[in-house]
Image (cartoon, rainbow over all chains, first blue to last red; front, side):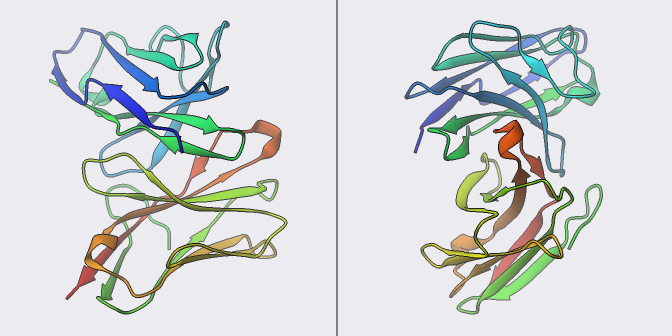
Length: 113
Length: 113
């Protein structure tokens, strides 16, 4: 399996600010994804992080709010921009492992005041 | 079972008994399915997956059953242990859009002594 780490593990931010979350994988992977898990709820896909090109966003998510970088095959960042309390969630990255299945990172717990 | 918002369906199981967690999926085009376990404060942990060309797959203490006719998935945990207490999510995906998972609402499993 792939070992995935995320930084920071948690943060408390003021509204109007931005936070960049990092995701690092211990092996090269073709596909990386970002999900959001709102309090007490299930996971929703935000976007697919494409290496060398712009991310592909799901309905309801836009690049201005959630810019994503994917500079190489082991690393991606998600920025939550101009935050409001409604952005308080767990943000998770996942990777497709060898085209077989998907593993998740430990998540970043964000609280916006 | 399914639920909306903060009220996850809860399955209370006595230690040593078998658990059965059910999931109804929505997309008839989905051809692979994954069960995840999420403990408090952690990211989803891969348990087992199954492709649509199978109706049963077994792992260590777990069995996944797939009924495509009624779009139903179940996870059976044998000899449930306290460490099995967590929220369990089913996720569905399609090889046409590999990696994009749609998650169910989740089931809270509580193991009692």
